Amino acid sequence: MVQNTPQSNIVTRPPVVVVMGHVDHGKSSLLEAIKGLKITAKESGGITQHIGAYEVEHQGKKITFLDTPGHEAFSAMRSRGAKVADIAILVVDAEESVKPQTKEAILHIQKSGIPMIVAINKIDKPGADPEKVKRELMQSNVLVESLGGKIPQVLTSAKEKKGLNELLEIILLVAEMEDLKGDIQKPAEGVVVESYLDNQRGPIATVLLRDGILKKGDIIAAYPALGKVKSIEDFQGVPREEGLPSMPCVVNGFEVVPQVGEKFEVYPDIESAQKHLEKKEKRLDGFGMTLIEKDMRVLNLVLKADVQGSVEAILEVLKGLPQEKVVLRVLKGEAGEIQEGDVRLAKDGKAKIIGFRVKTNVIAKNLAERENVSITTFDVIYHLAQGVRVLMERRAAPEKVKTDLGKLKVLIVFLTEKNRQIVGGKIIEGEIKKGTQIEVLRENEVVGRGRPINLQKNKKDIERAVKGDECGVLYEGDVKIEQGDVLQIYLEEKKKVELEF
Image 1: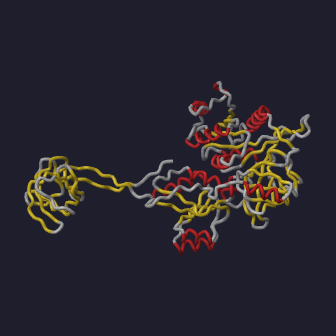
Image 2: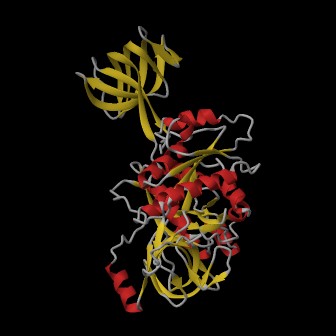
Image 3: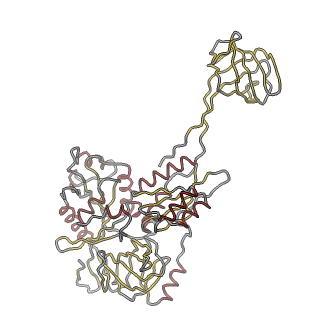
């Protein structure tokens, strides 16, 4: 709850909390349990538009939770310089313990410089081992209070609703220690945490105020959008006359959809807002294109997601995929269902369509089948990244792996015609067999290449000969073999390229 202090313009504002951790460790379940609303089923269905933040009340005090797709979205917001959250909750599965994404989340939290609270979740599972979790967290410089550190920890079970009140109490305690304030006399400013285009109402944005009071009629701007506030709703869709610091406000009135993570400000007039947007330097390409050189392989994508926040989060993840062998190029990335125009763009650009929590309309689906355009949809960003990595591996040119098998010393040349010869020799190393390749060595220099068409020993066809054997070779190649040459026998296989995160 916003409380006045002796300075009439300075108020204590509620903490803004972000929940982070490894996929499937119970972040959404924990939010569900705290919120008392089923958010996972709605989000996975891609039907209900989530607004990116909501409020709860505990012991008469309010707490705002960011409802983002994960640390990717948090990072995307921070990359634009936005101060998004005040406190981070790191969720770790008590049975699975610390995983790669847990470590990534820890790094994001540590870089942001905000306080951390550890929620050891799923303590109801039979293999739960909270002490193991604490020990493994130590290896990532996360020392919890029960082991002598300064980071609070709480044992939770979203399934059995255990530890939730304790978690909320710790959040309020940390917030009190942080002494979070907002200046309500300043022009309203904060950050855009979600945005999308509503078919009936137009551009909609969820904003979190840091300072000031947002009112209907205010001139508001957040790159690349400006507008006049037509309406303000709270996270439950209830109309409000004004928005206060740390309150999630669903705002209608932007002329276009603002970018997630952008700072918003209120201006005295439209002209001032326009000047601000004109001065703001932005990269035209939110993906950060890699320079594409000649002969490099490229994977083109058309990306569609439920909301703009998801688009930003996915682009942030895709930027982190290795692109030395295959370059990723996003032809379009936007919120909304997969439509006919997306399929046509994918066909023209030889691209794959990737959807996140969205549906494909019937016309687009039929067109994609006719035009053989690939559409793949995902509900979890981590799974989407894995899917794109598989597409990149398929696009990558297979690596050729050469394996030396043996050497044959040419003792005699029996027959020469066009590009074929019959030679006789002795195996001095390894073996020679059919289905291999040959390098012709003359004075230790490679002078040509070919392959053994047939092998004979004692005038009988054989499959292979080994060190010490004498045999005849029917050779086909681009150079004439001479007596005294050495034939280097080798296998060259194509090996599938595997990309590492």
